[in-house]
Image (cartoon, rainbow, N blue to C red; front, side, top):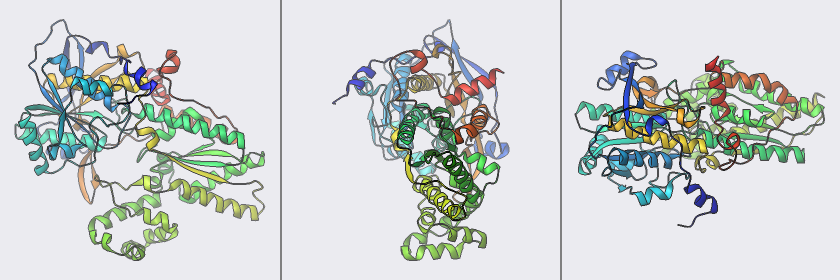
Length: 550
């Protein structure tokens, strides 16, 4: 394998770990837990794994003796920086349990388990991928594990390989699948533990026990670097407004974190749009006002950050999408209709109010709303060109204001979508350390016989030696939501809290950023150098940690 100079140097990096995991370990159990909502429904669906206590690992003066154990691992869903280090930590952790333990990777996600497509991950293989980005060690996929037939087919290969535990590395939907699988295997006494690890660059898989999902730190640093580059160009050419859409299917954590890092002129936060019941026209008018105010100072340039999932949080758009989901689920024949007739077919099925909204949209954007849902029933918001929609609508409004004598500047735009650029980046020091610790913690959860748990590493704004490793029952994070026309148990998404410290810091500064050119240029991720440069966690985590200390 050909390697860059950075890859060669980075391979030598030894991730930092919590002191509690470095030697003999014991389990400290907390109180019994319950789901965040819909307790009776969740308990009824998960009678064998509901109510388990959260746990932490502590140093022990007694070294436990464990038998060798075979473990399977799956990378599920979209890629996130640090996944390879989760596998490296898991590998080292089970080898620490017993040197004869073995690790098997299922190829291309959950489908590899169902189709019996796997590889044994040996030291030679794992060592090639330490501290690297991507999921290419075994690949990833979006097959949804939800049917008994899938569970049973997976169990055949697990039994054949004598695999006693399965680690699923994924986001909220993938870990929901892990919880369902853990419950099923426990209910039939299959003898297979299931452990989850919190992955998603979106940052929406977090709670009191999961401070952040891995990959969020690195992705935000990559996006912030590129936005900073654009802002430097913007401030140099002084002739464009850049509309920049950022990944984040539901929550606006990425947009908020990048705003805190780069200080743009405008950053939209989906959760605020929903809370204030802002219409599409209100959003467009607010951006146009910022453009006009800067133009009055002779500044015909600026940056606008847009969360990928914004369109689902605009009330009239959210109502439209919800009804579209129902229609598409109930009418699979829609896919067979000629494209020229699809728009009218949808309009005829919609309620009067939603039909009016649908007809008001540019046809291209309207039809993007009807594209196939992902395997979890979610609209593919990355395919909806919200950045172009807003840029066009702001331009139309400013043109009208110009005719009315309310706008005297120039308005030219560039649009961008930053998504894949951040998903497979080489992990930051934070993510390299955090992910390795998550994998090692997963091995400890396996050693102590836990199932239906998610690996948890907390207190991560402190030095790594002081991090707290443990596990949280996945059922603790769950509620009931409507998916594909049915009520399903799912992990509750962690949206941006408008009363939280990160948003409050942003809200206190954005009026000044809107009118001034206060850009920050973060530059690239730093791997080597002073700690204050290389090992900084996200602004989000730092602000949340400070708020907890007050």
